[in-house]
Image (cartoon, rainbow, N blue to C red; front, side, top):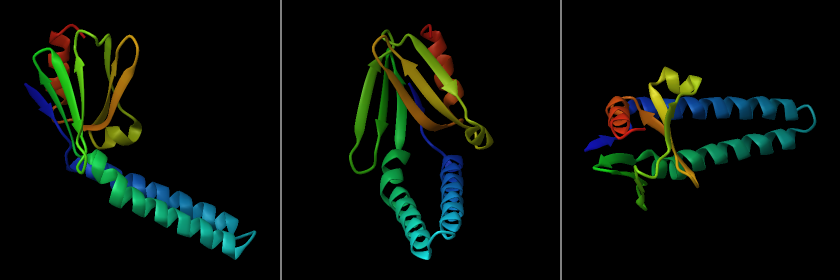
Length: 143
């Protein structure tokens, strides 16, 4: 059994993404100030509201996840308030891939992509702690 979760680096990555978003909002707000102060205030208020909703409501639900590889099945559980489980037989998986964006590389985070004949499943921001064990188990199963 292999279990992979998230770590403190993932939290730091989310904070950095939030700062980048707020910086972008402030630049757009400053640019819209040329036309109208009301438009500038509206853009800034919308940006703060979106970042607050993202930080307080949406992100905690997706932060908590667990990937378990038990026997020939992979189970991905996610959520805090409502636990969602996705179970996939490894015999159906045709391709498994780990990718990193430049931001994820700075924080040792990965995105796992599992592709079957009819669909694909991706899990973003997996910590690098258990990824090596997970990939070695996937390779043992022929992926």
